[in-house]
Length: 421
Length: 91
Image (tube, rainbow over the protein chains, first blue to last red):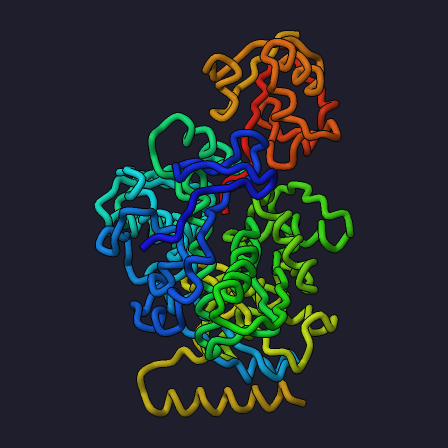
């Protein structure tokens, strides 16, 4: 059963049929999938969802499943249904009484990108593509390479040449055509926009972007289901293109529309790194004009200087009464450590951005102590080990004798005492 | 001042399916005007009602985004390449 009706332009509303197109023929606005929500009401239920697989595909009815396709044709490595865990120790440090973490480090390739890629390549296959491609800051590369391998599709993956080694190697291992471009992500993205016009490939975040982007809604669906089919008060999400935040907001709206949750207000707030903060800057300076920037931050997975969904992220944040902030590289690394040490979750730099921004928003009063807050932790720390390499390491390095260990402990205790004085 | 303009797929129905066209102009604004004269209809696709570049269109002069420069006033040297590229991609 498919509830997909077609595509429409978010800017001018013009409608178009299902196809591998991402921009409006007329105004270049982004195309978005249209659904038959009336048809869903009463047919898509909590029970029907709960009976589905423990993955994003339990929400298949709310995703761009193309007419005439069935579940066996999906490109599925098991993305989604990641844990939503309470975070009381981190909450205590930040002054928040009801903080939760959406732990999306737990995905097949260890970031939320598996959600969007699984949806994108399933749609791509239904549209007849045999080659997958993407422009990536790293996490997407990893995910596209893995899903393409799983699906037996050829892959062309374009990345900035200066990416973290872990992201390069963990993509290359799946055997895609890995194209390292001498330039930043925006240069890569621009190249891909042109390449997509010349080759008949499914670029997940270019020509099949309308389907791809819908995958991020599953973060919102899961949060609501995992909170017992209720909406949180506030969600804080990292922003690169701004798409994830926009789609989480959309997910809550859809759940209300289809009658799956009570309509309670959810504020959404966005997090950026100061070294690449075109969206938060546009909100904070009141202009609402997203001026492209040249990124300079350790949060490379968020380093999009020319964010496609910046305007819509600002719209969502303004409409819901949320806010945006951005944080420095040292704040990001501090937050990675804080999250690991308080909650046992090791996030990559984007997670550090989210936690550090949450901290700032809480200090500013934009996030309130009593609110039920969910922070989205979007990727695993092993992807960006370099940023903590000079900050953490063995506490003691000793020979393998009991007396060596005891001596080290005593020395450590003395040093600790000294540092306390 | 002849410049080469790279035309994105959605606009090629206005250029007889040509991927690049040559026009004259000393600034990006003049290039857009010349494009409209040669291929009527392109102007309203690239520029919004207020005369500015649509927010989901990126224009590059020799690989540099004109929003990092002087917008439609950005000078275009003889022989330059102007690229019109849909902004909605990536992320």
